[in-house]
Length: 184
Length: 184
Length: 260
Image (cartoon, rainbow over all chains, first blue to last red; front, side):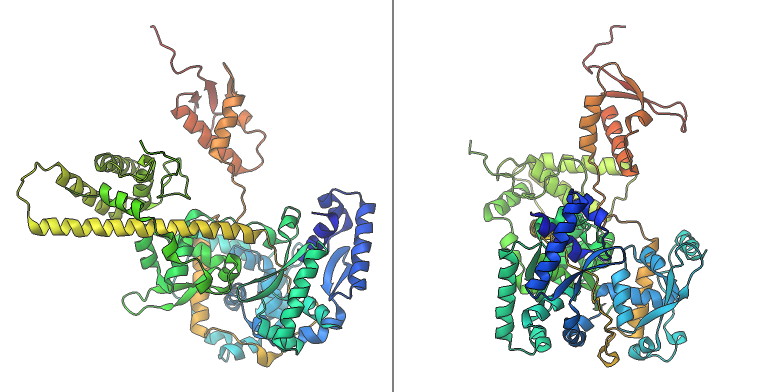
């Protein structure tokens, strides 16, 4: 696989901008060479009027959808595919509903998998929102459900959510969890 | 913005495969036209040796990184960390795929062994989900496969899975097995 | 003899070399497979005695021996007993029919099990292919919010509560590592390596042997390798007390005769 293609793939899958040093390391190329490849890729996207753009932001590089695609993407959010709440998002919603306010880290801990993109999607859908930040390193944001969530679920208040009677986890697990929930 | 670019942007942001009907609706074009654009986009990706590929699976279209780029990607996204799957999970996945909706008890009966932990793993991976409960004592849950399962197996519908009959051992083998267990 | 070009069919796709098996049906299939060089019947007598000896071993190790294990054992023993009857023995027709029924049930379960194992192998191939195709998971990257009327929660309050209960219950459940790419080191590879590293007349501590390991799973692999090699008589393992270093001594050839 040629360098350009590898670079394109990396900038496509990444969830946050990638610093040029990291690109150089992964591609095993000097930084100058990577910069040339980046410039060429960016120019290529422009010249063939691609729907994607390469941008430098947040100390690194990443592909983004073209600003002119906005009306299409807005329409896309109404499509069944975009509106479908995936199993992962549904799980995140359930965790936030019953453990709010809860941070990304705590959600990932409970589900056993990284949940960032599911949280983002639920935020865009207006079903969850940030509810402040925890003290401590990094000041992680905590999330809660929104009034829209209650409306869409068909309940009037959080107190109306059915209690979690079944499946009480073993005592040690509860303790371990509470440990991770203790802020600070 | 031209159609190709808009299509590219949609396929870039989507979190699951987009059916052609939805693409047609968002782009406000007839399906045939969208199909031509999709074909051209796919051909274009191949001809310019892009790091991305267009694939139809799970009932729709989506962009993926090129398989050859895989070794470069692991550190950039959690979705690139190869999901290993155990033999037990694969077998449970197969039983659910062909027998859905199916309960834990029925799965255990077929495999001759308790399969709860494999079911949990598959649930967590978003490959199977609860599909309701059976009447009767204990109201056991039944499971079915998810759209993600179809996407991962590279098919658009359950009917496209290989027929189970093709995997029954050949007649000579069955005879040999019968011979082994002949009592007299 | 017929050419043995093709592999045994039962586990065509599953190569199992150790005693790791999942449940009684799996064990039975592995035993059949081990004996089957070509497509030919396996000796029932051998099969039954092997199955029973495994069962003994499991009980001795106090592992969870389910009624399934015992049920299948009972059927096997009955089948074998039947074969050993001298010709002309009076047989009870009801018993005979019941045995046939049990036998057919066992056979059809074995066939079903094999069928699903076979199709699972196809799933594995596709899974591995799909894993090399990485989709983008970050979603929309422009400030676009969903139109609230479009948003639909596909479950009701009760289902959401059920889902939450299951998720929280999973937290306390036994860890399954399936979904992680642990790149688990194989015990076999560790054995190979230890064999080459522990040349003649070397004494070492376990800590020395695993000093290069970065993860505890690697250490675990070496530890299992060590136990296995000790069992084969290739190594002597000694530990003063439970916190003391594990001392390992190479045993030259197990053929050496002690003349004392």
